[in-house]
Length: 392
Ligand code: GLA
Image 1 (cartoon, rainbow, N blue to C red):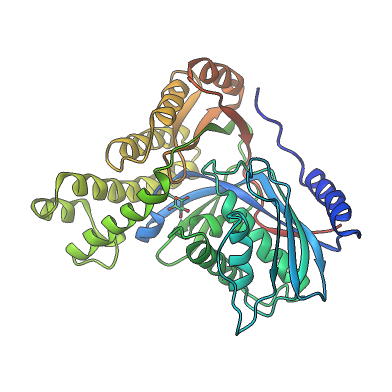
Image 2: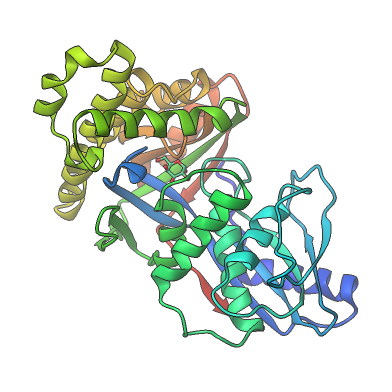
């Protein structure tokens, strides 16, 4: 059985009850932002390539109030946080800027406070999320963007800043406060996602192109392996550096500019590992464009085939998959009615994404469960809306 995804209203109610208990009054403002699943286009965003994510129905909610105390107080209700769940920090000023520290989860909030465009007043807030934490579906971007939308309300500046500025401020928060040199995809889709659509993002021009994805005969199945290998932290920046090195070698601004022909021409100047890494990026950018066109004509067969090729490339060339993700993908592909399946997100654990006929989804879940040597969690997802303020 798939996990039931809580309604935003339920999260809002629970967060408000917790807020009253903790701070002794009702919250006045609230905002939410979704997690995301990337359908195809992995490790291409920081190479100025294409990515094709959709916003998930799982969201992070932030509720709270502006205060005059000069201190920001935040409580998280997130599951799986094994650090203190409450944090207090002074409202930043020019002479005392915020710095990252412990607890780790609070760095996402502090990073957004530090990068907010405008003056942030002190506030009390409660955070609650239904996005699986550390599951490769951007729980961190959902906290950052929900925090940004919340701060817009406590500072009464909603509407003053363009959506893209929010995206960039939240990405900077992740770089500077969480120490993760991520691309633009996660924060972009968290802000710009639209129900019933996937979003092709051109990470060079930063243009977005919405593609309808509302055919009732197919669904997106997100399967959480519930493992996270520690490698993630060090491997991501290493891959990024390798890509930058190769782009410089090929005299390109980024790998977006490089072709398969260029790669062959420079083959003798790269070691075998570097060659595979770059082959992944160049081929994945091409696959993402092709997959978008396939989805536009409801050609799920081609879309699924490209997803499968993406997984193989991530597994063998980019080497960011792991046994658990490979097992989940292999099991999914044994089921009739599954068009395609692949790891999604940074890799080394987290989730897979599977495109499957609606009528076959329960069968797919049962089969994957039987075949997988762990305890997976399943989410049947339709593309949801991006960040928004909520009425209390
Ligand atoms: C993480 C990063 C994204 C992107 C993916 C890989 O989720 O945050 O920017 O690079 O990995 O596609």
